Length: 269
Image (tube, rainbow, N blue to C red; front, side, top):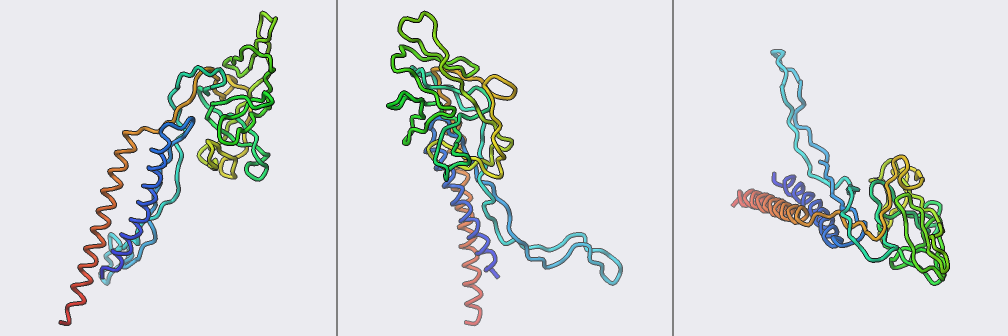
């Protein structure tokens, strides 16, 4: 009496605490380029079967319903929302925005990503000391395929099909110096998050399907523009309030169960 209620409510507190962590991470990344919001999915736990539906009595009548008491809830997983983030204008010619589906490919350590590759929607690129195009994050991951901008290039541009052009001294027309390839996955939600605005392939995501932008299902590229975070602050704050209220209700369940157990303990007095 009361013990099951207390245990069930405690599972609710643990699950809601995880949901609170997910919401807090979403809000913390409201200004992170290419960030995709996540949500915590819940599922109920096992049930104690105290009466089975369909059991017949001596008169041949069947019990129409069963009697089951649940044992609480747990977080079944976190699901990412890969909807398009808002375009953010930029003055940097190496800031690129994927309009549609696809991921930029960058080189990582072999033990981090399958085939030494990771994937990102963040298009904030820059040049390293050798003129290679790299992701402007903490480790400066090289773009794959690797593209090097000539040191004497006066301007760099990109077209919607992912072709990169550089204007060199003495040339009236820009010269093509590389071609971007994007990657698609059958199950984007199955990608593994590894931080640094990167995802890596997993068994759930399936292998990458690569191709040039603006072809088939691949999105197009827009220069001088970044993809902002798709976090909706208003929605996240509403979910935060709902989580707080649910947490309070589960706390009340524990308090009520405790009072019931206290009453039972005092019966012999």
